[in-house]
Amino acid sequence: MPMHFLTLMDFDKTTLRALLRRAMELKAMQHAGKDHAYFPRRIMGMIFDKSSTRTRVSFETAMAQFGGHAIFLSPRDTQLGRGEPIEDSARVLSRMVDIIMIRTYDHANIERFAEYSRVPVINALTDKYHPCQLLADIQTYIEHRGEIAGRTVAWIGDGNNMCHSYIEAARQFDFHLHIATPAGYEPDADIVKAAGSHVSLLRDPREAVRGSDLVVTDVWASMGQEDEQEKRIKSFRNYQVTSELMAQANPDALFMHCLPAHRGEEVSAEVIDASGSVVWEEAENRLHSQKALIEYLLPHK
Image 1: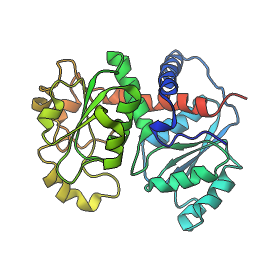
Image 2 (image 1 turned 60 degrees about the horizontal axis):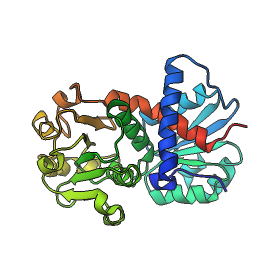
Image 3 (image 1 turned 60 degrees about the vertical axis):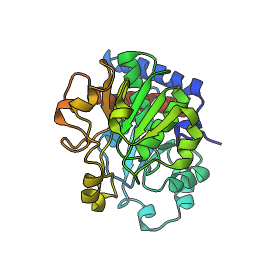
Image 4 (image 1 turned 135 degrees about the vertical axis):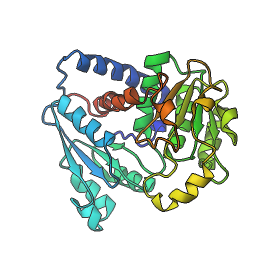
């Protein structure tokens, strides 16, 4: 059976830490111009139900730098978009490519696809989880501040897929997560319960940020929630990450956002463009951490 990466809980703590060490090695190699075309003629199938900039470019670039190739498939390009059963598509595609990444809505669909796939499947985002982004985020924190274990991270905003993956990251990398959300926008209760003492649910963003080492937010309305935009702006108006809010964090606290960001909504322009913001390195590290993931799932022949 192939190994899949659908959530951070699919790997043990030792493996995740090894992946990030390897990501930093691959980053150094790429920056130094050292060839690492380890996977010539290997093919990645990329299934996109949701649009993307960073996800598509990072995975395509990763395969190109590895000497392989990536095939982009939108709903217009596949029978999945015309109602072919997920298990049938999985059986066929996994006989033609070496690894598959999927960016979709319902997490149950990627689980079903993986169940019938003969090759590794990577979750490149579902409505429930975004584990690849967390690999990049933790790598970025380690590069700037060292070990994240024992630190405090503040999540401000919606209890969405990113929040769920941060909860799992708190378990896997042993940090404490303060989550501040408006009423009605809390993360999944079962995911929170499984994290135990790693997570604290709060209502006041100032309380959540106080004494934190990393502050993270995301857009207030994710893809598929555009019709809720006005309602969410009202609900989240007191949850913008501003300089005043960041002042409650530790003096050397970092700011992260998975992007794209809406300056003036979930984060002020002053914060995202400040020296403590590492969003650009965070975005770049999607490439390097995903290369380490691909390398792990797709051993050299």
